[in-house]
Image 1 (cartoon, helix red, strand yellow):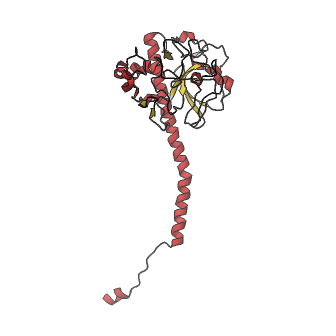
Image 2 (image 1 turned 30 degrees about the horizontal axis):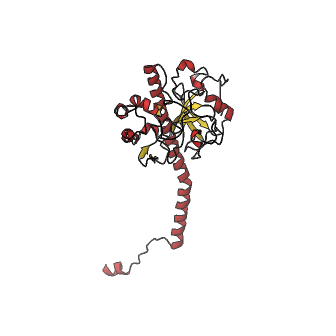
Length: 294
């Protein structure tokens, strides 16, 4: 019996080197085919989450309007035009919305009489509000001009339909000292952009600042996937780049999410006609925007 077991030949199945290399190559091809689909699915989920953030801000705006009988000001400052510099009060709409997004404690910690750049408000500026940041954005904070870790916002309200300085009488819904009511939006709330996306660049003034950090215009085509939206259009003071506000942009492929006055969030493709996009940026321009086919 032992001899029979000893003399029996045993064969083992095994990969040859060539077969192993072929299998590895096939796996690599499959991964290469699946990875774009996985990335696209992730981006679709992030874009949906971004739209949810925007919808939350829209609900907060409506609640603010119900309580105050007007929408929040785009920015609060003693005078205009607003320069994109850390000088002045520059209390943004974001600060005004804090009590309506369950951030009452943070709201009370801000000394608005001293302005957002005062040293007393630095701890509050460092806060990062999740509903103010798009999930597709790769950074969560920004090094401000005072070398402090400043929280950012990737969302901005629309102050104008064109690239002009931020002042007291822009044609958007939110601007310097604005107290817009829904009855003032003659174009119809469903035809008017309240808020959309923008890319926060290194060195901007943070989520509390009512400058181009949180306000943009519809005078520039919406730019997708990380392109900067800074206009080359000259302003009323062409020797000062600090008056340039810039347009909307995002890290999404193909366009931007936007909040309309009726509370709806819709995706605006980058291919939208400039005239149509500008019309969406006015509150009472009188444009006949009954239906947009993008």
